[in-house]
Amino acid sequence: MASLPVVNQPSRHSAALLQHLARRMSVAGEAVLAPLGLRPRQLIALTVLRDAGGMTQAGLSKTLQMDRTNLVGLLNELEGDGYVARTRSAEDRRRHVVSLTASGREKLAQAEIALGVAEDDVLVGLTREERETLHTLLSRAMAAHTGAPCPPDGAC
Image 1 (cartoon, helix red, strand yellow):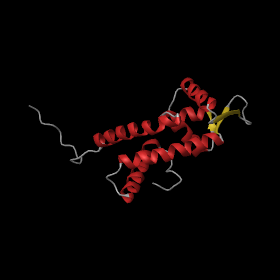
Image 2 (cartoon, rainbow, N blue to C red):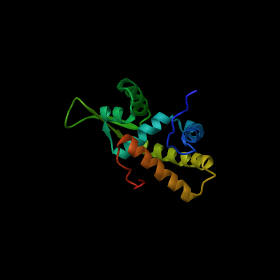
Image 3 (cartoon, rainbow, N blue to C red):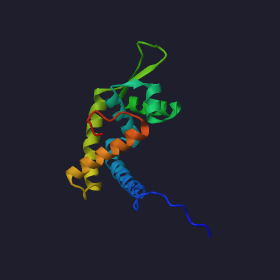
Image 4 (tube, rainbow, N blue to C red):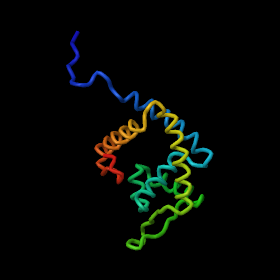
């Protein structure tokens, strides 16, 4: 029987823990978003638009890694609820720019408060400082993976 190659890896891995914690966070998040009439994909789109200050539909499709046809459906929902507005680009009339409305900002603020409560429940075993450290480490890992710059809050 051939022996397995020696691999220089830590004895403990985080993948399973991260997946389990992400699932708990997802379930808790969905539970607090539902009464607000939001689904996770809508929340993500609103957050991206807020952070970017608006963007083209093509840019949003790329950022969300969402097929353009599916994105149109999502934007139709958000626009129907009054959370986003689509306007023609002044630079290129063929493009639509999507931006958050005042109602969208308000709904996003409500969602973030509710998600804060859910996060407190899921991360109850961590101190405030440990949560900050976790956020910093996860932000840095995501930035390295996506090639995106670190967030403006300096979490990297």
